[in-house]
Length: 333
Ligand SMILES: C[S@@+](CC[C@H](N)C(=O)[O-])C[C@H]1O[C@@H](n2cnc3c(N)ncnc32)[C@H](O)[C@@H]1O
Image (tube, rainbow, N blue to C red; front, side):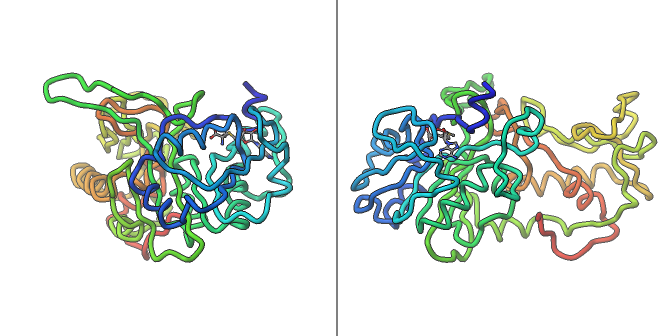
């Protein structure tokens, strides 16, 4: 498993190339006339998916450090990226730097990024005009490479719900064979884009700039203290497995729950004024509804209502709680 993790080998599953935004991108890039580059080809799953989405390219060029199928050139493409390709479709290796350190795995010296996929993506964008990449869903919160990003699709396994019935998952084909990691499809163009279109599968959610407008102004108010055992505000910062359940609550509801310094899921917050819990929950609900949770970190596991479970981070929490001291426009970076 660690060997697999070291080279970021999680193969693509599911078919995001059938989705509208990819189909539009394929047309705009004149995919059918191009030789498409797959610089991290693995077992060559991507061309099969492209075929079964009824798309074609003129030809493919495959590279991988450890080819898992025939017809792939063995090459360390992170160190020596193939040049001369206008279109790149890939699922790059991903490995968090801290995970590599913890496991004693090598991590390229050449990069300042916290995850290998960001470095891989930078290489693709430097050398290719049109880039389609399956990457962690958290990418959209990183603020990286936005200039040429035209679309970002949060890929959520399809579920079917019926009123009065327990929701039933009909397709649990997660994008990666070995993990349930939330993933997205990023589509880049050669030129600067005016805004990033955000999608959940085939559903258009809005432009990134438009969605950002629903975020509260950021707060640098350090008098709001997290993980304060005597705090006057409780927060359950992670959705349960059923629905969008993140909420503020009276601290008493958390009882003697041990407040740990590094805990990011349940906390007591010290706020130096009387808090209106209903108001804060209403603010949170509006933000979630209007932004479709695009700015909340998704993590492993689909809720029973078919959406990813989400976490509310401290920066956004502080901005919601700080009703008294609004600051300039929020920038998530
Ligand atoms: C996430 S897998 C994706 C495989 C394939 N793109 C797919 O979607 O099925 C990442 C691939 O990157 C390859 N890889 C990792 N580091 C590499 C490097 N430095 N140069 C070339 N390939 C690399 C791994 O061997 C693995 O096959």
